[in-house]
View 1 (cartoon, helix red, strand yellow):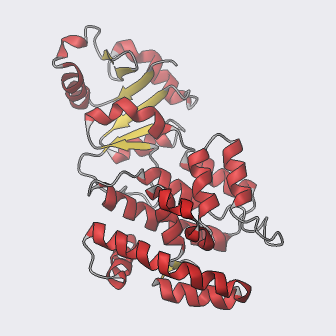
View 2: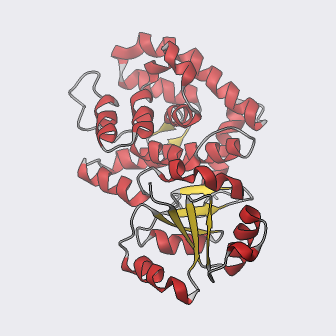
Length: 304
């Protein structure tokens, strides 16, 4: 595997990473460039020696061995719009300022760069939106999915900040795509979730495929549900809080689903308690006293 090339435009951030990873600036024996552990090569774009890299960025045709890193979300947005992989250096654990998080990965500490390749392996926001077009997903389903995705992203960030192992961006992408096969499977009993998962598996994204496969309500009753990662759990849970494009308490969402799908009434009754238990676990982690308090917090954050 080729070394990951990370480009920066901030001299201060370049110096910070060089000193943190190598102890001092002497590692940057070539102006504006240093390597770490043979796996990462840092390039400061303001350096004349990085002219080729600047041309690459401006061309909008980067390869998967390159990523742009910044603490400024405005700068990240600019490079993301050029279809370049972006890494947000986010030591404060803040929420992305855009309606949808545009970055591909984020780190809170320099040491997290060592495993950044796995964090970058996900489809971009643009790719996800293109797939929704490809599958002819209608506006109402997209609106529902957007609220599910943003709710799950918010919970993922807050839980990550409390030490829970979860990738907020992967969680968001999973929420955005979780109903991609909704229309295609309307007349195919048991296919919803499975068809979308097979598509994402074929694209090389098994972790996203799992989110789609497991978001169906009755899947929570399977013994394997105990092994779900938090990305899967949060998309599953937030899907049970969003009726149409509005966040509602789970019992209100459940009542609507029972009316819409009476044939699944018994199965939904069996799944109800595990979902309440999941709500309680999330509230406990976040220090929120009740399910209602969780709903109000999400509404407040998403309306910011």
